[in-house]
Length: 564
Image (tube, rainbow, N blue to C red):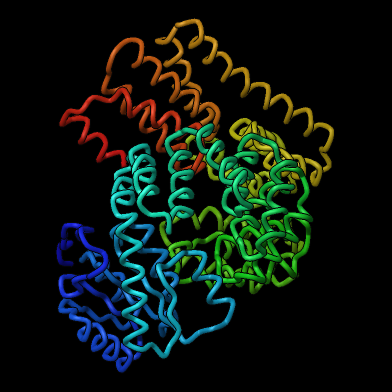
């Protein structure tokens, strides 16, 4: 593979006359004649540096190895990734420069395609046939808007969110045409650098002047993060009533309903969103999981199959919907199909956690179809695995609950209870997880005992955390650091413990002076938090604190590069 070609970002000195000759272009289309047509149109504008790709694989290789100013990409490509998936993946792996223009080109007018693409916000969506004049107008318009946001985007790419927010203010004075977009960007940047109160004030100020969907949705998200689920529900319903195509509001509303213990309402919201935009693999997966909890096997099957279909060539491709579909087949008394799906997923995701997940799912399918002997053999293998496993290597909460379900069904109680208590302790502040654990106990005929075990597990986790916080607040920082390190080993998935660990490490450095080891440890904890709960606001605040006390030195630059 050739080395990445790096070029300086284009100048914003003059947006009225764009020098198209100096730009670098990528045209992606599976039709040779369309590729040639678009290339000729670009050449007539003065373009010189034009690359062509015939499919998603070729396009991603080119985007990885070279930086392009302008990408014209067809939505429908024969085999492999479609245009939406190329855009999604290129953004995810930073193959696009912040100032790059991505234009989706398609003859497809269906709402499914348009809505799915709109969710990923290309710079423009052009319907075929495309005239040279139409292309020129849209490129000029997109390029001029990019120049307004160019410096902001570059600061964002450096994760200098506070500076990016300041740049928004500077641009608002000179660009009233883009004021709405700049204010929206500023609010998101304020949240990223932990300035919740300023973001809230911005949303409220905008709403005082006009009824603005994104500002109302922003306030609703803050309510959701503050635990005001009922208030968030009301506000998100208002958002959807005002703009039925604001899809992110549906996802947030479903989350609020789940936190309120209202799975039926969550399911209804997700179904409506999936009808509007069915090509989101994450949304289809969530819909399938909610349907499973409600016992709606048919709806779960439909959503799992759709998730597999739309996610096959997506960066969101995962083994989860395959396991979900295999479980559905077990519940439908179709064990042969379930086993075929499990064989498929082990081939597709070799080297992943699929072997363990496949074994668990196979055991549950055996139970669903009356093969208790095979289920017991599998459960005993899992019991042996748990006997030697440390807390750090235990699987996800949902997988742990599946293991516990299988163990309890074949009367292997003690390790199952221990595993469920572990899940509660690592998610002691998550009502949805606690409710799911309670359901596992109730399914095994242990409802009352399970409720007591959950309460005890939550108290133990809280006591562990509170002990570390008390040491911190009484200025016993060395002891607090050691205590929280032990707490992390015991409960590596507990978000509150991780957040307080990062806070205590930062406080130690603030009080006793810079320590590279403690800074590295705090950065490691914050990275773990960001992977577990992206966008967590206290994470933003702690990251800002850590960045403020980090001096500039070569070893710090190296540390930053390693951690990010």
